[in-house]
Length: 359
Image (cartoon, rainbow, N blue to C red; front, side, top):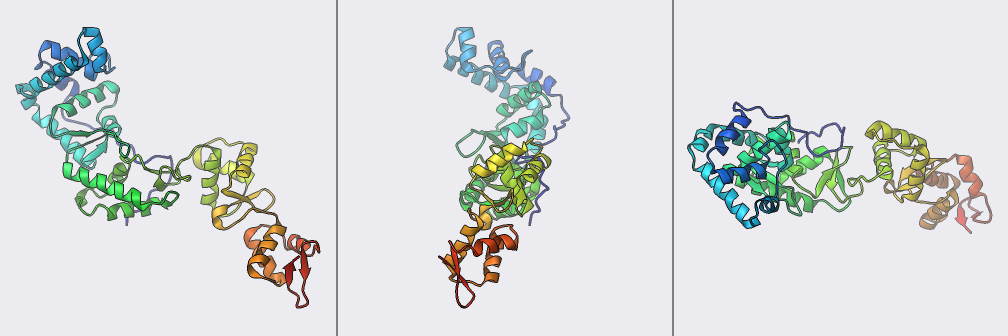
């Protein structure tokens, strides 16, 4: 079993530290660009943001500035990349590309594009240089963003396919509202990864693979589920309140809920605002003076009288002690409050055998 980590900030995977390589990426970029024809070199510099500006230009922008079509710019770019690949400079840089490939392999062989680029370069200029390197060598393959997955890079097509399939199966195994602890989710994921090399199967890599999916996510309490699940799709105070009460595991006063939101999630929540959100959200039930519980715990809306009536409707006539027990499962109230309601002849009557029934 893979153990879950302690919940801190919301997020799918731990940030990867900036990589360290034996080569100078700026010097290598200059060396490789020198192998391209002048016109192609100018296009590559602008396309990848390799000049004084780190802004990457579109095919259309370069075409408009140069007075040529978008397609012509694409052709010049492709020709420039091919010229570099056929050059001595590219062959001499083989060790550098092997180093990058090995690094990607150490991250799990398939990595979300933003995660990878942020780990390859400490600033945008450096990231642009590595984006350029990734486009040059056939060892690196980019998968475009889809409705299901984020854009990602991989160095192992078989592993990549297995990860994609496993993520799809994992998503299908989750219900629309289900949330599970991180450890359990990772175990479920592992069940779908039987064809993947065991060397990759550590918690950090598993969570990085999970972050590729656009449909599976986590909340600040390290609970996982479909990104559309209410407990995962955190939108405001009421959602943070839900997580706070759920984590507490018992009814809470609305003032305590507001305080817990600040403590657990570093989110400022005014007491009055929190109370209003609890009142409006059907996930919460008022069970006492300012005390709120979760509907999913079996609590239902209504005053004490209605709780008594519901107990008698489902169970039939009950003794006083039995009624008190039923009500206290659903409401945080004193025994005397229950008895006052029970002895109201407008709603309940005492039978000859001492039991009570609804009027």
